[in-house]
Image (tube, rainbow, N blue to C red; front, side):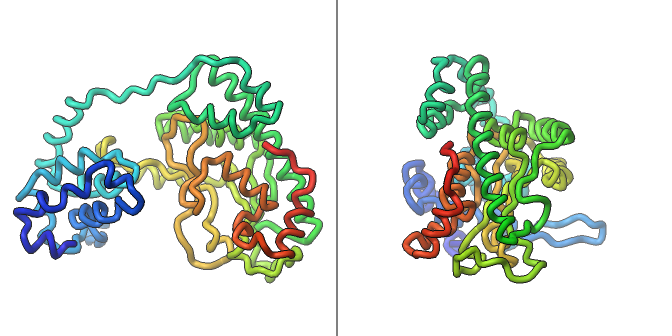
Amino acid sequence: MRQGLDEDFATAFDRLSHYFEPDRVAAQGGAVIPNVVLASFAPRSFAAGRNGKFTPQWADPRAPSWLRQDERWINLCIAVRRDKQLGDTARSVLRYADAVLVRPALEEALAREGPRLVRPATKTTRDLLARYLRGEHELVWSELRSHQALGGDLLLEATAVAQETMSRVARGADSLAARLAASGWAPLYGALRAGPRDSDKEVLGRIERITGAAIPLSLRTFWEVVGGINFVWDYECGRAPTLGVDLPMDEMDPLCVDPPEDVTHLFEEWQDQRSDVNPELADPFNLDLAPDYLHKANISGGPPYGIELPFLGADPIFANEAHGLQFVDYLRLCFRWAGFPRLERHAGRTDVREFVSAMSNGLEPF
């Protein structure tokens, strides 16, 4: 793709811009080519200088000059800077492009777009908790997720639903933890289920100050009611108990959601990422909450599972996990498979079915 840009850059925008049409990007695989094109203008790596600062390195050193030759690429990056699929690459281009080009184009776009306002939904039918208690677990959470943001009476009732949900999660986690402990299962760090701590409030407050928004309801309530869960086997202790399932650990993906005290190391990283960066071009805050399924098995793997902040709705996506589920649905998946959701891939095996049936016996739906 870079070769195509270089060969006839004067016509590159006209030849390639149709790949950025919203309907085309939204189609399956539709973001691949646009991201490859934009990546041609973004730094590929960074080299450390003598002064300790890192200098961006482009795959082709002429890439910054390409943007000066056709500023339509700058305007395109600005237009997609908030896009879920293209935004990361577009913001990277804009952060390292010539500020003389970016600044006026961004100011013009902001004036045209006007302020971003998200008005929270506040009205409630006052029956959400009652419906949840009657068993409408998924329907109630689906309704809560339909709002961009929650406030007023709706937020109060949603909080009651979330507290009931996470109370059930806590009891289920305790049941699973007790059964794992009886089998000799030891967590890699912390406890199988670590309850909330008084110091958590300070951590939650700091996250909200840094990100400029409230912690999403489902995660906040998880931290306030459950605390943290860590079913990752302590591989430093040697081979894990079999649990009656003859599968390697990377085929199990044990449930893990870090408690607040385990995410404080991110604060300095977040602040460094935001220093000297226009807020419009800053990436979301990645709140890492668990290793991926390979790292859990002590194998080099991918990015951690977690949540992108800020998120103003009730229940964010648990990012980087293969299913792409919202947080509550991810917890449901984990409990459905007795705390080891990758067992889903082996649902037809007798040993897996027997293990899941025995371990999940009596768990409350949520």
